[in-house]
Image (cartoon, rainbow, N blue to C red; front, side, top):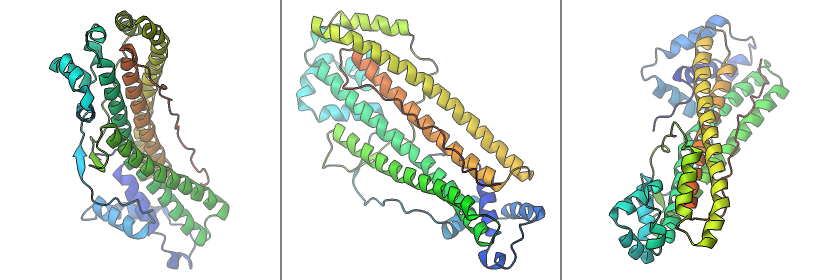
Length: 369
């Protein structure tokens, strides 16, 4: 998976700024590095034979990293698409063989792929058990979306932690040689603590989502690991119009028993609100991510021109990573809302609708000058 975070030049700068502050020598000479020394450090990076590989090697040796939870070798199953997850969930429910057979291969394919709008509304009346087929399918789809999103976010949460660790290490060295106050250091230390907690939460969320997916598709006790795609499906450019959803809802409700039809109407309204709001938030979050990418690239250029500091690079890295995490969460929320809406329009009754996660960018430590 290709991860877009702070550009390579930023990490080169961070690593060599740290390398330029050996504690033993700076204990004797607390004078800050001259501008030409910073320029020399950047020039030195370009002479590395292995480029980023050498930077990462230095980073691993010299920067503190929290050890992640190491999972033992376990059998895994591939669920690379919603279709894969849905069909596996159906296989775990032997009682669904009859309704799946009556639906026919074409309708089964539509449901497995999430194209429920293409279903004939009369299926609700003609095929007994279709409601259970759809219920199992939507549960599998939502569990799959959660698992993919939480796995996708891990790399970006880790990148934010690495930025915070680098900032804390730099601050510690500056405090020890007398170039920074302990008060300023506590602020970057708190930022690292927050990043560390986010990393622990992200690891737990990814493991929990994977376990929930394995349970949803009926593979508990058989597999403990799932091979998933690198990212969620792309966000559609345009949300389906309100009038189109209303038309579909009316067609389905006409095929439902009276009691179910009455319950479906308020559910349809709430599901449609969740769908529209989640699409708007996902679009805005995607634009914010693009802005953060631009800021990161420009910050590197400014740093190379000695117009920005290493602190600016670290702030840009952390904020870009957070923007990526927020965008992934918003994208996940949209697809869950879309699944709920399609289910409601087929007569389904979700226990609750998606809670649109906030997230938001964390404030920069603001302790550096």
